Length: 380
Image 1 (tube, helix red, strand yellow):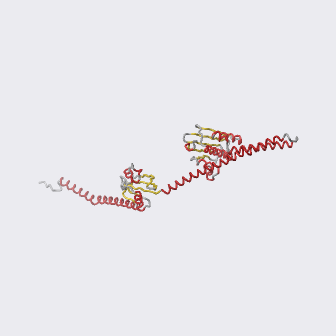
Image 2 (image 1 turned 90 degrees about the horizontal axis):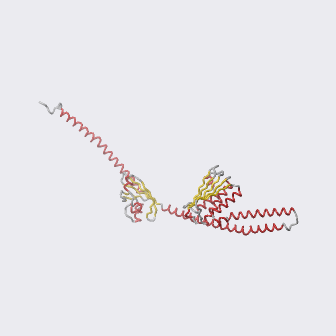
Image 3 (image 1 turned 30 degrees about the vertical axis):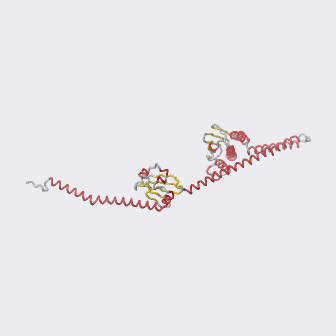
């Protein structure tokens, strides 16, 4: 008779082995894996709670307005500064009502991606920079607001002061040009005419002098000296108020200036106009003329150049002046730090018309100066 409950029975043996294995797995699960899983769960919960407390503490203690918001932009909590701001503008308790430029903003994406987004916004009568940070692990986001009203007010005042300074500079330049024009007219109509009369009268004296070689020689020296003084005064009068510039415009004035420099200083100059010439305001034309005059004067005095070029480029949106020379060059940074009345005068003249100055040079490579002026501000 077969003993079905005997260990020798294969079925009983298999059942027994299966029971032992399942019992072992159960014991391992209950006493090993379950405690580890619970420990991991509690540690994660503890970490999230710690982060929550830290974030809450930071939000509460910050002197700047801070807001916590959810995936639809509802404000979940705020610190004391944020509450004061909310009360002052009497708005709904959500981010979209507070910041109008967030009407189409995707809060869900920001939070899920733990991303950031910043902008400047006007809230009530104050301006703020706003930084949004998504906290994906916690399921919400924070908005950090920084009051920049004082900075913006300072920038507005600074801009206003700069505009007033430019207006004053232009007035001073106008007064200077008026004085130069007056002196030029006095020289031309007064002193030059007087010298011309002296020259004529001195020339007539020769017919009344007793034939005396020494007297004639002295008379010739007086005539030469008078003629030299007259030419110098005419040149000074021209530099004070160039007639070509007044009568024929900037391009003609610059051409005459370059020809005069070539003759007087032995330099080779090149003048080029690119684009269709545009007549500018008289105020700007005289300033551009003075800038070219100053740049060419620097070339004559300091560059030791044999060649220079002046180029005007007329474009729809701007006019560009480029002055180059093949001289000894200089260290731009050092020169700008030391400063100089010439560069300062050029910079101030350009700044008055919202232009830019770029100087490229190094020792032994010559110098290039590029001045750009927006056409909308200068078209006559």
